[in-house]
Structures are given as C-alpha cells and as structure tokens.
Image 1: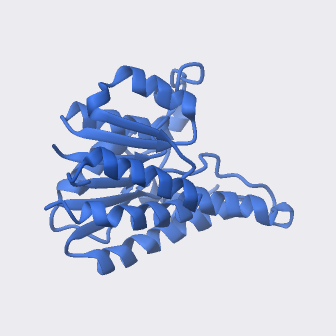
Image 2: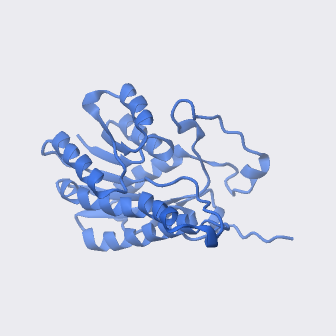
Length: 251
C-alpha cells in the first residue's frame, strides 16, 4: 500500500491533502501540534489506514520520536511521499524594528527547520520506495511581498532554495518539488469550532485571472500531480489563480 506523510495535517491545506490521498486509497500519516484537530481526524479514519501523531515538527527531539513511531508503523514498508506543509499561517509580523529574534525563529522553525528535520528523518523510509517524492508547501510570498511579512517570506524563500538543493542531492531516488500557494481559502478545512463558510467580496474574486479564490483541494490535487510527475524535480509550481503573472499599477 502506498503511504503519504503530511506535516501540519490537522487543519487547512494539510487536512485537505491527507484526506484527498486517503480517498485515493493511500495509507496516511499526519503530524501536527494541534491534538484536538488530530483527534477529529482519528475518529473519522480507520485506525489501520491512518497514523496521526501530535508533534512540533520544528523541534528535533519530537521529530525523532515521531519518526521512530512511523517506522514501527510502516513495518518494513516504504514511505512514498512526504509533504512538508507545516508553518505559521499568519504572515504578518509587524515592523522590522519590533520583530524579536524569538518571533523570527518561530516562523523559520515552523516551516524551514521543520522541512529540514522531517526530510532528513524521512529519507531512509523514502528510499524503500520505487517512486518516492517530497513536496514542500512554500508560498508565492517567497517571490513577492506585502509589508511587514519579513519572517514568513524568509522562511518560504528558504524552503524554495532547500527544494532545488534537495532535488539535486537526493535524486534520482527521491524527487523534490515545491508548491507556492497564493490566496487559498482554508475555512472549510479547519477543525470543528474554527471552520467557516467562505465569504469573499466580488473584488477579491475578480482580482484573480481565474475569477475565484483558491481552495485547499487545488493544493491537494497539485501534490498528487507532482508525486506522479516522474520527469519533474527541483521545480516550484505556483497555484495562485494567475496572480503572480498579473501586473498591478495604482492609478
């Protein structure tokens, strides 16, 4: 049975991706700090087909313990795909002069350090697979910015460069690609009590060349594409409704 591991699996893009692959018949594993969100998923998925572990993937010790449990669960089987999706969703950190080193480090650890730690731990398990891949969830904010989003942009920019560096170093056994989501509505994919129905203004939709806001399902489908795209590695796929190609002038 093919197996995928998703970090940040409790809510949003991670939850949608995990459930998308389970719907395709994959065995799924998920890591997240949010124990309540994982409990909801655990109740909805057969225990034989899902392993959901509470883990802060930015901390080396917790990652080591989680992967020891994952290896035991796999029982000599391969891990076929790792999705490094964890991160702090809010990109705004305030003025640079007011950004503390500890807050800066939180953004870096949640996304970039986590991807390093989980990829390093996953390599021996991925090497068991005949078709292994890693998909890093970056952001269009790696290549464009709003004010006061320094730490988030740095974390995602680092994830972009880590992607092509790992692709060159880990190939041909493991392909590594990144997805850069744009504006993705995660409300319907949050845990109970935090889920919401999308309510966007016409101007929000119209600013996208495709005429709508992105959905978590768009990212899950892109992960599936990149896993199966055997001649694609070291690439960064924008899933943004065309926004990074749209010139905007203020008049």
